[in-house]
Image (tube, rainbow, N blue to C red):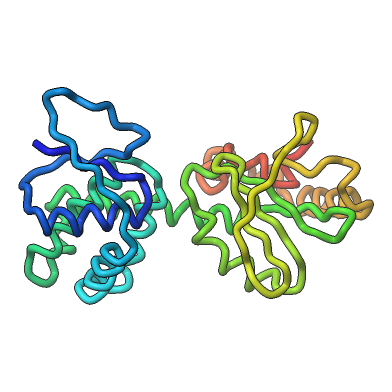
Length: 254
């Protein structure tokens, strides 16, 4: 069996699909180059990412599938899970080889896996949109650092651009070391360098606006005043707001 080795990008993944149909090698394994361990008894084929080939596959896929399924594939890719990338590869090959409607055959393990993973990524996206809390810096910038399980920054960009259209903000993914910067007109990807004494998850105290502490206090007071201790249901609360998101919430800070 041949192992297709690609660079882990969506472009590389789609190029692998193109190469598979060009070469028709039968069953293959798919491995990201940074995770691949060469085997003396296994034949490798290095997939060189090609924008034209990838675009052809993506365009054909858009003709074959609904917008909903195109989004599922993209969301599943953003999970960054190598096994899910393999399922995407197999799903796309399966769809191109089958009659219309094959993507709804949830008896196919690749269809099922991509759909389930996409739901997890969408859930993470919605939670980030709900739980992100900004801190205003002394220069009027609003900053928030996150470390989501999946790469959801490309999915939340539009939401925050529309919701906070009148203020400049930065949402930075500490795990993936890149972020989004909105300058009141467009959203751009950025990378930041943190010094050893920088608190990555929050802006440094001397960078925070003097009003920020007051806003935090007022919000905590509001939260406490609307809380009804007699109706406290910790189990239900954690179901809706898992503990791993509490670090983003002002009302949860001591």
